[in-house]
Amino acid sequence: FNSSTLEITAIIDITANPRDDIPARHALVEIFALKNKYDPLVATGSTDERGRYSVQLNGDKEYMILIKRDIKCDNSSIGLAKVYLPPNSYIAIEVRLHKYE
Image 1 (tube, one colour):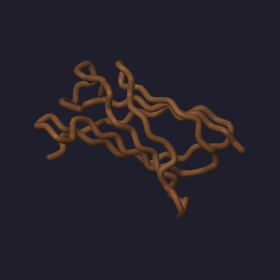
Image 2 (cartoon, one colour):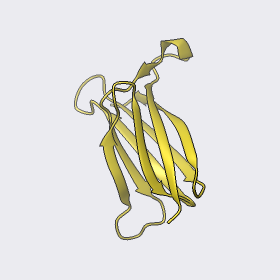
Image 3 (cartoon, helix red, strand yellow):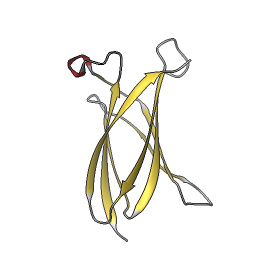
């Protein structure tokens, strides 16, 4: 088991200016293993007040990350990212959420 840590920071991307970034608080995070045929959903949770979510996963694998926020209202947003986790590593990524209708 090659345990790796993935830390995700979810940002609501309203403008192109990074100083205006807003953390995606309490957004739903779903992580799928790309080559897992039986049950690809390997982790779920929600971001904290700073828009962060951290999880331990098997290393040397590729994952697809889906982040959803307020899907049922006018301010709904969604973000997707694909990441490869090397074995026994720590990876920090930023996922920008965009308006979803």
